Amino acid sequence: MKAVGYRKCLPIDQADALIDLDIAAPAAPTGRDMLVEIHAVSVNPVDTKVRRRDDPGEAPRILGFDGAGVVRAVGPDCTLFRPGDEVFYAGVINRSGTNAELHLVD
Image (cartoon, rainbow, N blue to C red):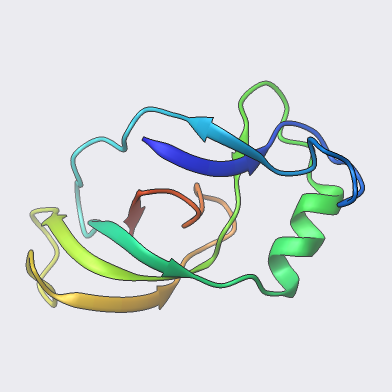
């Protein structure tokens, strides 16, 4: 799937500060997770601070904490949402971000 991320912390005016990526789609949701098809994201101060300071190591880091889209699948413990629901939310800093075609969120 397509995503936007970075491989190392660079000034934003550098060509590789943000890069287009082809990554594996997330696994099927488990627990309370939902798999969301992302339709819109925003850029907020957390995104800029993480990109400047958080070296992702070997795997690229996908940014994005705010997302909006349509639920495609839910884990067995997800009780508030169903596939087809339109949602908007803020993710968490310790998981892959919303700047991708699909996103797993609790």
